[in-house]
Length: 256
Image (cartoon, rainbow, N blue to C red; front, side):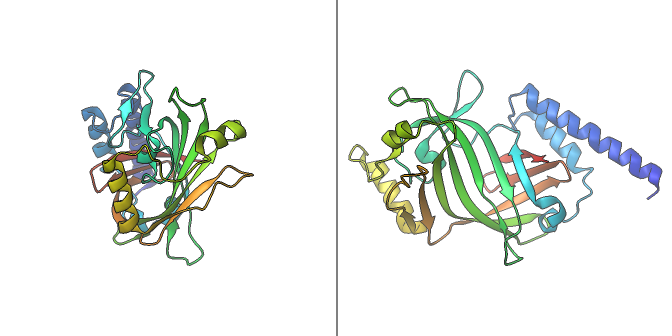
């Protein structure tokens, strides 16, 4: 390929990426929107990374989600943000599970682990509580995971645990008053208790003994990690586009 052709292809990708960003902005980040789907397909046709799942050069970074975090069982608020229960964000492992929170930002640090074969696949969700029963608190749910390639475009992903922690701006006393009690709530209905018990049995979920009194952190581990697949639709020095097993497409921007 001549340098002239390479320059033309680079320009096409730049235009295609701009078109995708504009399409996302126009529809609130909805990756099911026809204009976004078309923009992604166009970008895929220009992709130079032939084996993205094996491309450490492009894989490793901290990725910021720029499409909407419209996962199942959520609701979109008037300001465009998406809200979920705390339980939905972390396998029902943190109390109070029914506490409503709005997602402020989602990012994912992906880095090679010491074994040289696996990478981190943590999903870090920054949230603000929107439940009137508690003070407004800013926190982080970090679902810890690992991944490795099982094909040129497919990763096997498994989660290993999770952490609930306050953000630095949060009043630690109010945080402790809201999240300090992590025993199973007597207010749970039978369906919630059954689902929680099922998840603990199936995945070997083990919660921490108590909140760390200094940091306000609470954690859990998974002894039998659930495994899933993640297809990389596009990957380069700027963008990563993935599709999960349930068809959820996410667009992430590399943070420099």
